[in-house]
Length: 45
Image (cartoon, rainbow, N blue to C red):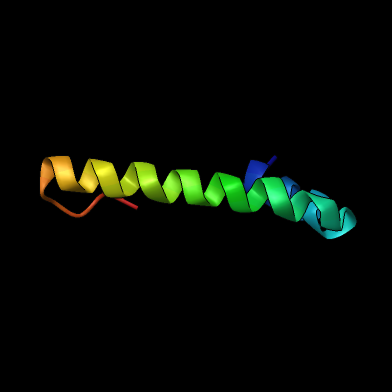
């Protein structure tokens, strides 16, 4: 089972999930940015 797909299903069912999802995306972006600054190379996506 695809966890990402399941997450999208849950988001589609409950609009309230948008808020924690946005916080999660922002946190992930910050982590990737910090990691990119440390290594000096583009992160593997």
